[in-house]
Length: 397
Image (tube, rainbow, N blue to C red; front, side, top):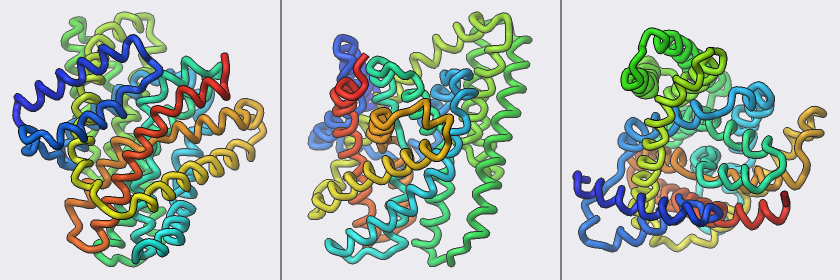
């Protein structure tokens, strides 16, 4: 991918985002993905290739930091328990149930091993509601719906990477299943990344006070977003959770200073430009890359897996929320339905697909890649376009 490709992709993204200003009920990401698929048939874009490294190391830290930094500290205080439960224990339960369903159904279509089914489940469990959060905030009376969906997605990215790494190691390298080693690794990687991010976010929030120029404050935030991600990955803890923890902590500390507006003005001006820029490139690249996986004979299975993902997510959400009286009073069945539908598969799922592609050979892995990519595309398009009419009909203001 050369500089001309990047400029053209940005131009397409600018046009789509500009048109969307008049029609906010049509999410941008699925439109960009469909355009990306169309671009894959244009010879000029044949040389474009997206890799796991490009998505994971270059684009993802900025998207994670922006989401975490913008996330309201008040919402985290109010819904932290529910968000933590859904993005850790809830995600693991979802992956196990999902893997069992994929294994049971997949056997009618193709020879699929149980561990292969679990790898697909781990790829499809992280959620990416970037295309629907703004619509949820417009459509729902209860702001908790959007807050919980957004907060869950930030943290479950880190959980899903740990789970995928463990399962893909078993699948590709025939490693033995060890529950104790998974728990130990999960706690070390997850808690280590979160604690490192929180500490560095706190340290940078203090350093900002000695930086009077807005330009230097933005530089510090860039160093924090990418530096903490790279450091965490280097020492073997979760870079995703480190970046999320740093962004949340920085926002939390800004809330408790008498110069909050001053600090947020400088950072918001920069990151408000970065987010749509990266989203334009990422979703167009996802569409271009996805085109090579779409010519396979198991679309019926992909649709069945997609439907199963919605049902399982609803059951896990419903069970988790109904167990606790405080959450049960705050969120009703219609809102749980909307939260289930908002669990869109997106950037993180594609990162995991590309990671599997880089390490695997041919054979069953080809089916895993095509199945996973097709479900991601169905989820992105169907759920993103369906969220507005569904939320309007169930959660009328």
